[in-house]
Length: 397
Image 1 (tube, rainbow, N blue to C red):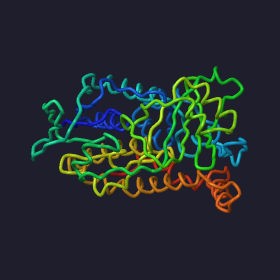
Image 2: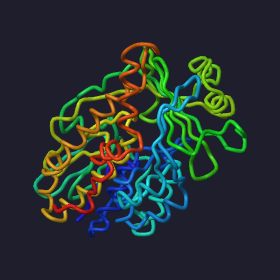
Image 3: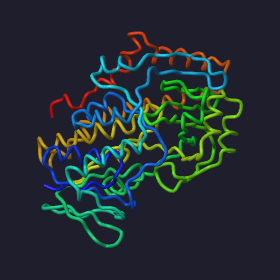
């Protein structure tokens, strides 16, 4: 049996590896000339790492990653810690897997290496897909050059602007959230005393927030999200549009020196507009199915977008192993409640992190909510169990 996987991102590569583990042949079809990720970090929470453990990739990821010691909320201008919750080894003990920060390029390279080891010819590059045709016997990915690639199933892991999702569900346009995001990575050697703390830190402000954390290769990661009333189209779904240092400094003027130093010492500042979309009404059509952002576009405010795609990848492989091609029809029912809940939580955090009036009642309520949600006491730690303790590798399908 052969699976066609549209998109060579994290969800696509994980799908390929999960299916290979179940005896499938796979072909990852990627429109770009190379599978790469430019300067950006990613957070891998325990629920994502459970899948990486099942794939035997956890040690390679740990070697390339940084393990944060805490999760923090800070005031963006003063740097004052609003709350701090321990992470580190506590996450491993509680959930059976660590919480890690890793450069996206490092993660992609680990996934690619594993895929090439098991199936050296699995990737087709320079192959933009424009749709699919199917019958009772097979499904064919239709390429822009007029050629076709045939398989038994097709998985659309092609992002929020998914061609496969548009064919399955009809065109559903993403909506601009009123936010743009900046990304940069900076060598710790350039930052000196202004290096961010070894924690997953959210810096709150009025109409904006920043996220800082360390990566496993001597880099610090910066994300800055700013409210704006104008959408800004980018070349693709990632962050390949380059802005200027002057723009970012203006957006975060008067913020804490750690934030300003990250911006000033970065050699490139990439930006993209944040779009959102309601959950798709269904995820499959015969031999075709969608997962990841193609099925449930995820804002980054819970750091769960990649984790949800990784979970999807494992689940779809299990369903196919249990029910053959009919398993594709079950993915939606297995995943929609969880992914929708995470989407809702991410949207809520977008509002929570951007308190407009520092002295307002909302600000006080938000700070209390944040402290309750993220502090290190038992009750608030358990509040995140629904995310981190959801182990898709330990469930029956």
